[in-house]
Amino acid sequence: RLLEIETRHRLQVLGHLLPPSALSNTATGKTPDALKILAENAEYYESVGRYLAFTRVSSILKSLPYAVTSVDSLRGFPGLGEHCRKVIEEILEDGVCQEVESVTQSQRYQTLTLFTSIFGVGVKTAEKWYKEQHQTLADLRASQIRFTKEQQVGLQYYEDLTTPVTRAEADMIRKTVEEAVYRYLPGAVITLAGGFRRGKETGHDVDFLITHPEEGKEKGLVTKVIHFTFCFSQGLMLYSDEIGNSYQKCRKQETSKFDHFERCFTIVKLNQELVNAAVSGNDSREGGQGAGGQGAGGQGAGHRPEDKHWKAVRVDLVIVPISQFAYALLGWTGSQLFERELRRYAKNCKHMILTSHALYHPQQNEYFSAAAEEEIFAHLELDYIAPWERNA
Ligand code: DCP
Ligand code: MG
Image 1 (cartoon, helix red, strand yellow):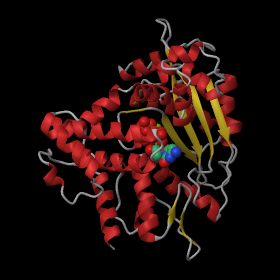
Image 2: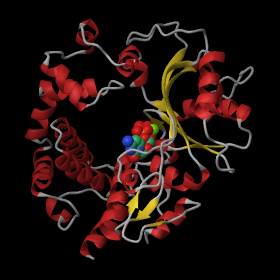
Image 3: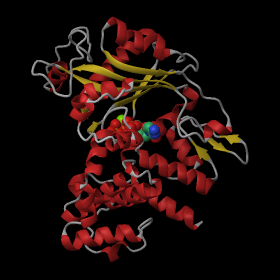
């Protein structure tokens, strides 16, 4: 019962992230960032427990509607351990925390932060390259490393892919996706998920869920439609990785970390001139092609030439059967920490398994159907939390 109350409190608290402007007190603003750095560093040492502990406290601090002036005022906060207390105390007293300073100055932290920011590079690979004495992107490019396909494009379009995607750019990509999908599957429903659905103004990619009111019509959409349209007819696709649907109702899959939807992770060429024109209210699109532009391109070598009018943008397309749509929408709206906490709550407090496909009660061998996100929160006996309140 106590765990339930604590988790419910944490969920509700995490859900109420305030915009950065609310963090008027310098120490309050600095502390979550400091804890985030320690979380990242823990991740670089593959310490999941410490990563989560720092991330949770950082997120809770960000959500506070008041400035923290003493550690004592945080007494009773969920998850606030001795280590976090020490960091907060030091920042409140000295303005900086020595541990955080030494982490940010360490070569290992700097290199792993740089390498993991490359598309297709995780902590293990970054660490391997660091141990091989590589420190910069130039080192990697000059090396004999056999990069995966992802890493090759990650390095090639590094600058573009680490520049935040704006909402105007996401809207433009949405138009292109709509045109491609409607052409082959009229009546399909396309939903912008991820950070943009939570009201964020920028993101690192654009996530779309695509479904159709008649279950089964959506099958094979990625291969038949999107890949064809983007890739062959317009030359807009710089990279694509397609995966077919592999979902089966079974206990093994319900506990799997990943979902099993048909999907396509892509990198597309976005014509920035059209985005700028649309933003300035002067949309001069002819034929309505938002993404793409001049020929095959692909010259990007980590810097942007003056005459390059397009930007490489990551777009994820997820094809969802309508009966699983509410779960997919909840799962793909995020944030990742919010999803993690919600699933933890479902497991620990309700003995249910929540995934992007279903809500399942193993002991009762029961699946709960849901036509909307509201119904999922109701099954979990939680108040509904709107997308913009999920920015944990
Ligand atoms: N997601 C997840 N687990 C994954 C990948 C995604 O739970 N392994 C969910 C949570 C994410 C959402 O899907 O919030 C979209 O994934 P992104 O990585 O694109 O995250 P965001 O859209 O939240 O971030 P950004 O705005 O930077 O794109
Ligand atoms: Mg996203």
